[in-house]
Length: 469
Image 1 (cartoon, helix red, strand yellow):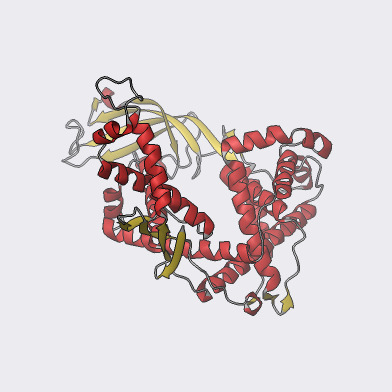
Image 2: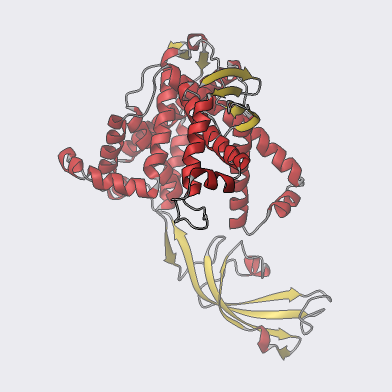
């Protein structure tokens, strides 16, 4: 077999495959023996008839056609393997020629991963201004902690304030006549946010538990309830319960209690918050630096992006969008109308995103290929051990005995693949950071103190905390 390779624009490869007649003849013979077992010749048991009688009952052109199809299938795979070509999808067979001597030639057009030309990574330059943590940010976080620790307390002797949670009963009169259909018991509201009966927001301010307040409400003539339409209703409102969110006082005692003794004073709390905010700012700065580095590589890389890859990613993005909309009981047409766009414009936007994603992905993979970056079995084991710590086990020997169980659980949930993918990207970005010229306010960027696997686990923990909040 002879294979000629021609690279074409659009990340396509044309393989012209020439196959010797003997290969086709051998396949024809195999097919003949297969078909012969099914041929019935009068006077002979199946498979025992003379060959010329069997041949008379098997159409030669059909036998050649089937043999050629089988040979193309097998030689196509062999050609790809010999030429070390990894197709993005099955190639398109064309120009099949079969000679009288059963020689065979055909051409197959194969979409392949494009050749990517990367810029010199050492020429990448980023000079970054670090994010500062201010006293105002620390105090805002202290206030957030106090607010999150607030509890609802019943208010007996104080007047109702904005934000209080109140339960009321009320009766209604229209003129001098009672209107029992409008009476309600146990109506709950948060003062200042009620839109169903907004008059209550101001009418109950200052009232105490057990007090009755009178509130008037004018109904328009077109109101849906004809008994109320065009009338003024007088509501007698009895305050049954008042609850208020009470924020604890910032004190050393509160800090000691809320941190389970880890911190003992307000100043220690502020110092810890400042430290945490600095760590968060440093991670965000590093993320911004890495994002700028990859943008520079993508911008300066050259490649031909395969339409097949873009189409596949576009389909994936559209599927994700439609799933998100379905969770909100909305289809694509309704969504387009809600944002004053057309469906076609949305699809075009997603197509641009798909092309950008494919370009970025190809660049990342080429960086990994050129620099032999991969997720090793040792990396996976590190992730599994860190997962064991994350679950609360602190003895590494105990964790090692649980690795198979932890791995099986993480594989089943898909979390291991997800984390391995993030680790792969982390290793690539870390490599870029190490080989580019990166400074923060004129000073060289210091190497990370944590391993890529530890960074991924920190990101996972941060994501979980964000979801909880």
